[in-house]
Image 1 (tube, rainbow, N blue to C red):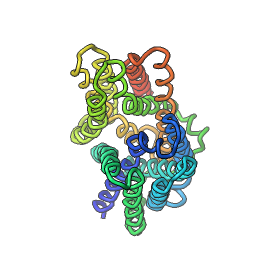
Image 2: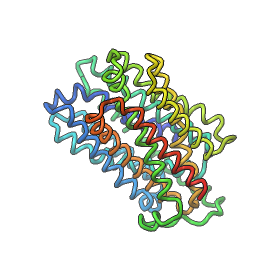
Image 3: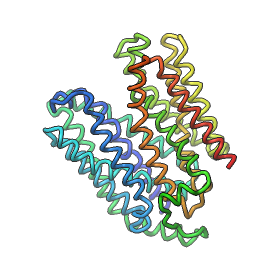
Image 4: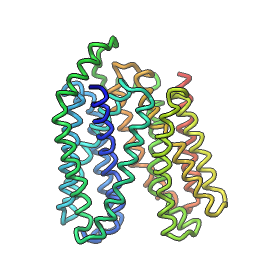
Length: 384
């Protein structure tokens, strides 16, 4: 029973990653078909991010009322319908309309599943589950490239991923009795205090919460900035061929995926705090390598930054029940998700603004500064 539910959760994490790279990989063609400037991609991603922030902050109340199984099934259904809506969009405003349920669905399922795994599974599975998210995020650009090579174009990619999400949503609804049995078994065996509603203001007054939010914000800002600007840095600042830069620019997410898989084997031995410390330190070293005049070898810095970043997100989430109490964990995880989406929304555009004035040489320095902020905040949390 427990193993079957864990397999379903692994599948759900793949589905979380699948849509995440579709907009970026398809936008060079999408914006031309929709007759809008390239910069309008930011409008779509900001609406999605705002939806995820709202639903993340609401995840505590929704999960306590409806249960993690139903929240997951409904959320995946919303993202599936949004993706299918994208596939039928012929005007830009249609994308904006469907971006709303996309974001609302993504934030709720992310917070609900992450907290559930943090409560009832060990650090090994937390890292491997997030590695499976990376598998989904790595697959979607290939789906888009295959679709663009056909007459179906980018709508075919959204349609294919959308119908895959519909199938997963149907499977999740069928598995609701299993969710209820397992959750009832957990409740019967769990002697921790019952989960309670924690308003945002009350959560921020819990010792250590503002600190962990800053650490999580810094990490997610680092990840999003590296994924968005890595290839551009190598082309515009280092003078590499765009094709080569695009190919090696994907190494960050590959390092992220592989690093989480490897971290699963040592997570129990090292513990969450050591993984966070080691992860931020390696990410900073990787950013330093990016700044050095090493030619093509400097690509190794992007890989090292990805591998270093790998265990940070899972370890912060997994340590939440221990740091703040199991009864508070769902509320805190929801707020952490909101901080994460805030970082991924604000900090990459901020880098674009700063680099337009200073130059793209700022890229590794920016990553090092964010990594240092995350490391300092995580160490402060450990002392608290």
